[in-house]
Every structure is written in structure tokens, then in C-alpha cells.
Length: 487
Ligand code: NAD
Image 1 (cartoon, rainbow, N blue to C red):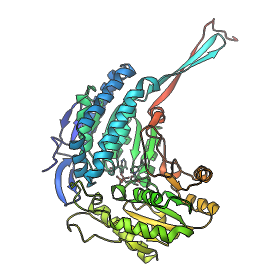
Image 2: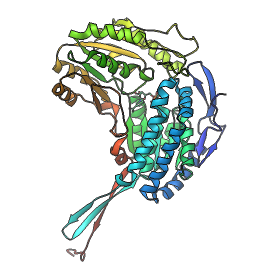
Image 3: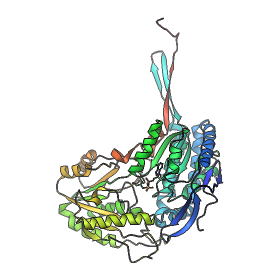
Image 4: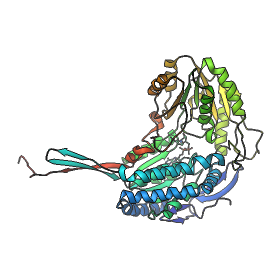
């Protein structure tokens, strides 16, 4: 098999297998070929991973932050040196075109390791609090063994976005990739060992929705960081709350992207396409509700159709391919059913709407699709589709469009295209979302915090903010005189 790893899990610095675990087949969605067979973790594997992480965490937390940072920076360097190999694996794991993975996946993971490696030293400082003779100080301390649970759309990126701040802060991490994309995280575990991380500091164990709870409910897990859907988020946060664990929830969205009539049209169309078609539309922060001012709507749709129909769909391993298949055949069924709902509920199909006839029938491909005349109550305007399906809605008035944009349980992201700087800031200020873009879309450099509000989750990844979510304050009061008591 094309991408068979040495074993399913990576624990205590080595590959480990337990064939008693249920079989997980890794399928390359461009062809349907099974490229690897792995096993979900058994309870014995879970215990082994947690025990080794607990040991490693103590050793790791005792290092200076600079020494920890050095390991992470070395890992970033190795990832960059192996970018091609890691990108090819990411393409096999997800079906995303190599054109994307080579610039957006291992490189984003490496950025994260480099950034947190660099700020590990300064980012963990505490403070001194003068109290008039007496004083107090705070220390920022790690939480212990953290659990990362990944989604399937950015397997290597998600793995690093969780591991880098967790490890920088002095924690150990157990990472469970999505059962749909189990391969990339194992390579990152190998790289961290090669970079000098202690054995057990970063363990990868495979599993599905039955394995997740074994980890989330384990008393030795101090924190859970999940990237996944809202229903999974509710379950995982609920289970973690039972033991008052720290949680970060990076969940789904149905984000608004508002295009005003003074926007640069080509630029706004680029933003809408990036925010709906990149990674075959499987991006949580996508601006899937594109509100376009009625005055420019038809021109917008005309150019959008032209540019969408020019997208090169096909073999993800071909450097020229711009759009690959969806991650799985199950996901394709889901996306196709939403396309049918859009048609049935009366949206105007501008382009796409089914399976492309230009690619082999074997893969989980769908056409990049645009619906216009979408209304707020349609299913395709309310539910997260997680595929390349753009809904274009009309608007006339700023106040009204803001209210409509906010009329959703989600609050992950949003964007605005306009030439009016004042309006841009006024609008984003009122949009209820954790991450917003003005005159661009979906850019997530590691320097800026990323995360959602409302049902899209809480906690933040990336930036200095992420370190706070992987550590806690310890406060020490220091009495400088005799201790006085009224008794
Ligand atoms: P999912 O919710 O089905 O699964 C996510 C992960 O949770 C998987 O690893 C799965 O095995 C695990 N899991 C499922 N049930 C569990 C349970 N009860 N306990 C513990 N773990 C459990 O999501 P998915 O289909 O893999 O990914 C798509 C979703 O992820 C979309 O909703 C998307 O918006 C969201 N997402 C969010 C972000 C973000 O940063 N906000 C990024 C990428 C994807």
C-alpha cells in the first residue's frame, strides 16, 4: 500500500501496533484506492500513551523555555526541508491538490513550530505585583498532558497548531488525528523526536468517535483541544466539563462575506472564491454566505461564473490541478445532497451543481458550485455544507445585511469587501465572529489569533493568546514581615 506507515500509533518515541483495535482504512479520495490500513487504539494503547506522556512532560517542563523552543525550531526546520515529501503525503491523506499542500499545509505547521519555538522564552513570563513591602508574583505554568483531536481538512496544520503552543508552554500532548486522515501526524511525531524532543512528549494514537471519549474522559488528561464540528464540540466539551478540564473548541461555521457596491469587483470575487473553493470548500472559516449588493450582483455573478468554470479540477498530484476531490465519498454524498436541496428550495444554479464529467468516475469529485438568489431561510444558507458550494444572497442596506449576517448560531469568521475604510471597520465591528477580514479572506498567519465565538467555539489558536490557553497562572504572595493574626 502506497502510504502504509510502520505502525498505527507513535508512542514513547517509537511506532507501536495493537491489531486488536478496529481497522481504519485510509482511502485516497481521488481514486478510491486504500493506501493504508491502521488500527484504532485499544484501552491498553491509550494507557501506554498517557503514561509515557506523563513521564516526558515532567522532564520537558524542567527545561528552560529557550531549550524547549530550540527543539520546536529544529522541528520546523526539518518540516521545511521535507516539505515536498510531507505535502505529497498530505495530498494522499486528503485529496487536496499538491499545488495547495506545498504552500499551505506542512509550511503552516512549520510556521507554528517556529513561532512558538521563538516565543516560548518570553511568552511564559509571569509578573511581579508590589504590595507595599510584601509582594506577589505570578508564574505561568503548564497544564500537564494535553489532548489534541483533529479534523480531516488540514491534518498536518491542525496537528502543529495544537502541538506547538502546547509543547512551548511545557506540556506533553497526545494527538488523535481524524480517522479519515490518519497519516500526517505520525510524521510530525517522528520529526519532533528527530529534533530532540523527549520520547513520549508527543504521542499520536489513532481512533474514531469511540476512541475519543477514552481520552477525553481520562483523569490524566488536563486539557482538550478539538477541531471538529459543532455537534462533536458539544459532546467533547460536555465530557470535559464533567471533570472541569480546560478546553479549546475550534468548530464549524457558516460565515458571512459582505461585498459592497464600491468594492473592487475582481478582488471581491477572488475573496469569495478563496473563501468557498480552496481545499474543495472544506475550510471551517469559509465565507459561504456571500452577501452581494444588488447594484453589482449580476456583474459579480457573470465574472464569478466565468472564473469558476475555469478552475482546473482533477488529479491532485498534477501540479497544475487547482481543485481535487472531497476528502471522502461520504462527504461527497453529503455535499451532493445539499446541492439537490439548493435546487429544490428554489435557489438559482449559476454553475456546477453535481459531479464533473471531466474527471475519472473513481474519485470523490464535485463541481465548484454557485447558487444565486439564495434566501436566508434556505437550508444551504443555514447549514455548514463543507464543500465547494457558494451561496450568493442579495442586499440593499448596510444595517439590514449586518443583522442578516449575524442571524446564525455560528460565529467563526466573516469578511467585508469595500473601498470605504470607515464602513469596513464599522461593519466588522458589528459582525459577531471571532476572526474577520477586510478586503481579503481566509488568511491565517500564525501571528494572529484564530478562533470562533457563539456556537463556533471558544479559546484561540495561534499567536501569544494560544500560550495562555495551554497554561495557567500560579500566584505566590510573599510576606516580608512577621505574620500577624487577631488571635
Ligand atoms: P468531526 O466533528 O466529525 O470530528 C472531529 C474529530 O473529533 C475527529 O477526530 C473525530 O474522530 C473526533 N470525535 C468525534 N466524536 C468524538 C467524541 N465523542 N469524543 C471525542 N472525539 C470525537 O469533524 P470532521 O468531520 O472531522 O471535520 C469537519 C468539521 O470540523 C467541520 O464542522 C469544520 O467546520 C470543523 N473545523 C473547524 C476548524 C476550526 O478551526 N474552527 C478547522 C477545521 C475544521
